[in-house]
Length: 343
Image (cartoon, rainbow, N blue to C red; front, side, top):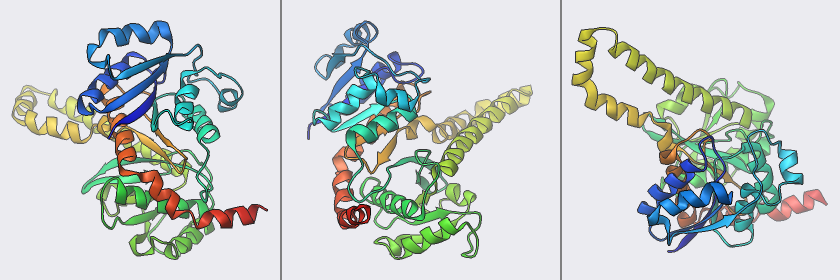
């Protein structure tokens, strides 16, 4: 299966070098994937010329504008028609590519993706979903910041999309879905969360609904999908990354504290390398906008080439799993109801 992915080469703290190096790593894993790379001619073309392995795997498209981290979403919508981000997303909208990857400005990316790709029929709002490590493997987290305030219906739709992601992309036959709350008891939580739970219990994923969960259930692996509003999700994500960095830093300081500690480090080095790999967020880099008419992957802005390559992994997995086709079929019943409500 030949896959074409469009790439915003100018997004990310270390772009475009990080992006190009990530393409090199990804192209070794996916020889049948072709990349449409959008970016500044003077900055990107010389880097691509140095990578001979990309010669027949990349088509470069020069862009004259760039959306920076400081660009407001409203400004990105009104202007920057020839920016690398807009053109990369437009390639998916025009059918030139099956998915887009960018490590650029999250707000601008979301605004442009919604404008150019549109939300799927039957879905009110797309959700940003990603993976995090647990004691049992990995957990799907959504929403990670796209929707700061959510209705009960939004949360129900996030739960359905997350369950389908876990089932069709992670290949979990019966993924357990949990709704993040201040307690696991049914009497706790806001009216919105309680109503969302009632809706999920009556939805197509009712058999896989675990119920309310607390924050520590996420890392314990109690569930396979954790559903929450974007405000909570973004806090959970950033706090989790911070705790992992803190733990690794404490380990480094502890093993430098004395000569016996240094000796212990030599003995424990293989175990520590394994631990560092499990706590390395780069291998889980790449969040997807679920609910859009097209595959759009958001890479962490501060990632390196390894992390960007993993974001490409996510794009390939989503395309190959035909995830969007499953979502379209799932929400096909909801679409006429949504239209009727808007009339």
